[in-house]
Image (tube, rainbow, N blue to C red):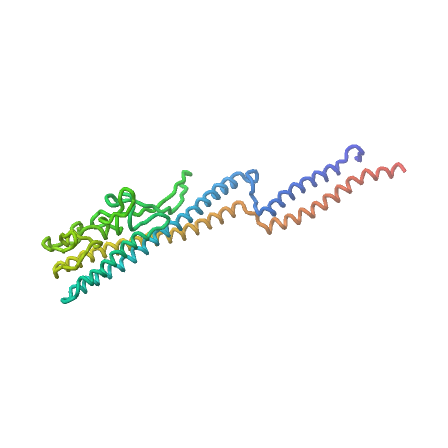
Length: 331
């Protein structure tokens, strides 16, 4: 039946044109944004997962920055400890030289004094961003202090999030485990009577001194009551020089152990940086699989929809022209 009031063909063509237009808007949106799921209405589940993972990736980016800061702190401390080791090696060599008969110990002591001042300079300078891991630290002179480096961001199976850290203990007082050159007082200022360089020989558990050995210093006292930082060989006997050498060797061992520990942490931070980079890339890839549009597919679909739209417009034009044909019957 042909009606001039209701054009079923035109209505059908118009509905098809509207559907094509809606599909074109969707496809054009995907082509312009590159996203198949750009809003929650596109796919609520995928959009929710992608949004959460993007926020986690931002947290991982902050972890990467924190790891870089931590690596800088550790590297600075390691460089300082390595430099201090070289200086103490020089002190050791000077003591050995002082054992030779006829050597002017006072001259050698002048060199040792300069080396001792260099040790203090190294300890004070090995600071990064206000933190010094080889000297100072609040109350490290009496109590070990834990310092941390951010190492990871974790979301567990129960959707709980947490920040993971790597802890390094600054110890300036425990015999056998000291790992800082000098400890710090209640204000964090360097205490020259604690740490590997400031602890008196009698407090070392790894070395033994003859109580009768006496070192003539400005204040007087036994070799066992001296530290590497205050060691004075000017008037030491051969036996006392042996004790002084033992003291320096014990300090070297402790410093070498501390440097090795710092090196291990530096290695771990490096590995964690690599892992976080790979993890971030994996999360980006996973998000892409969920929400990214296939541009080859979308561009092909857009071209097809454009063709369909042209055909639909033509179909609507034909449907509307059918009513005009009725006029031919009245002529």
